[in-house]
Amino acid sequence: MGDEHVIHSGGCHCRCVRWQVEAPSSIVAWSCNCSNCSMRANIHFIVPSSKFKLLVDSEKFLTTYTFGTHTAKHTFCKVCGITSFYFPRSNPDGIAVTLSCVDPGTLKHMEVRYYDGMNWESSYEKSHISSFSKLDEGHL
Image 1 (tube, rainbow, N blue to C red):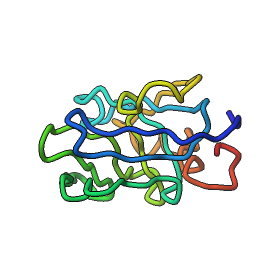
Image 2 (tube, rainbow, N blue to C red):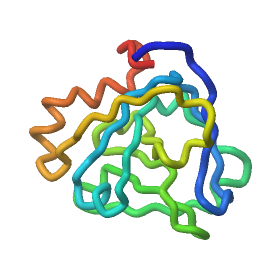
Image 3 (tube, rainbow, N blue to C red):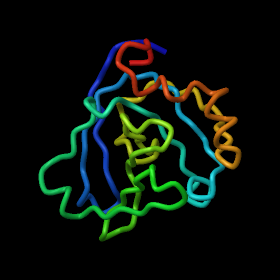
C-alpha cells in the first residue's frame, strides 16, 4: 500500500500496556480463522519488530500464552486481558498489531485479507504473509 509512514499509538483497554508502531497510514490487515484469532475476532497488521516500541512500564503488565507449535507468542495485559499485539507464527521477525487497539486518527485506509489459519501451512505459502515483516518488501 506504500504511502507515508506515521507513528500509530495504541494499547490495551485499561491503558497499562501502551506502544507505538511506525507503519503506513494505509495498511494490509489480516483476518484469521485459527482457533485463537477466531475466538478473539482478531484482525491485525504486521510490521517488522524494529518498527514497534513498547512504552515505559508496559512490560510489567504483559503475560504470554502459547499453544500448538509454541512459535506464536500471544501477549496480553494481566489487568484487562486484551491482546493489543503479539508475535505471530507467520512472522517470527515481526509484530502483529491488533487493528482495534490502534488509537483513532492515524489509519486512513485498510485492506483486509483473509488468512486460513485452520489450514495454516497451505495458507502460509499462498498468502505471502511472511513478507510483511520485511523492511525491503515495499509493504513498509
